[in-house]
Length: 324
Image (tube, rainbow, N blue to C red; front, side, top):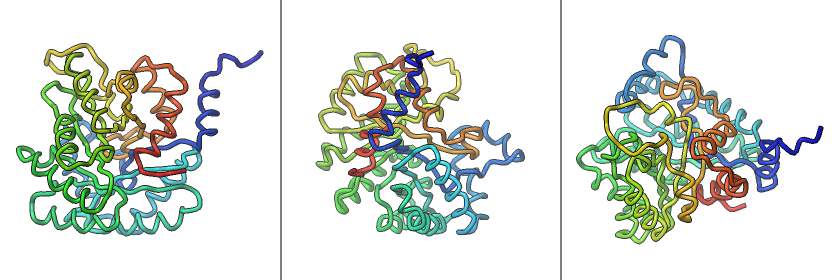
């Protein structure tokens, strides 16, 4: 029997021909930290989890973080991932332990995979200690990361710190936005404004963008047009947000994933990531990039093979600033 029907194999073959998988977004320093004892914490709200991970970070040695990251990297290489992006926590809890582990990982695996690191501003960037650690990370990381919601009420100031640093250092920005799957969030709009204001067209990546789908079509189309104008790219991590909670909020019918099929049609560069791997955020996620692509194509009803290949390869390299 001819396997004409086996579209998965055809897709993966094309991905390999295009330089291999690019996993644009992970948190390798926290990978494999889940235990049966901690599993009940996985039910907590995202904002609570931001502090739950502190205990693990405080107790972890550089070599323990290194070992977790090494295992994660080897698992990615086995799947055919050739470029891997990871946020790294740098704050007054973990200090520079994860950075040191990441530097060693980069050296160890430089022949096997291209690693691109971004600082995770899990404590914000405005409080003095948080700011000091943010500044500390800037020299090491390839990309500057942000989490505006952590500095709630002062999101604009948070973005100003990020954009000023990116402008000065000539680095890309990866910013977590619109994560809560609600039409009350309009954080992508803020990125558009700041990219214009700082002249950083083509240098800004929105991570997740889940809430875009909760807005009416007219608003979505307006945002896509503006994203295109200032060259804002987007990373989708489908299984990371499939667990978005039911709520009584009224909104358009949608899946809890950025509307990738609309973004692609609007000319936006979209990449894919696995996000958290086996930690308190996503205890059962195993970092399988095919699973992510499958979730994306199913939830967005998007079967354009050439575009799916780009999402998994070329677009990812662009998002991570990596040339073949």
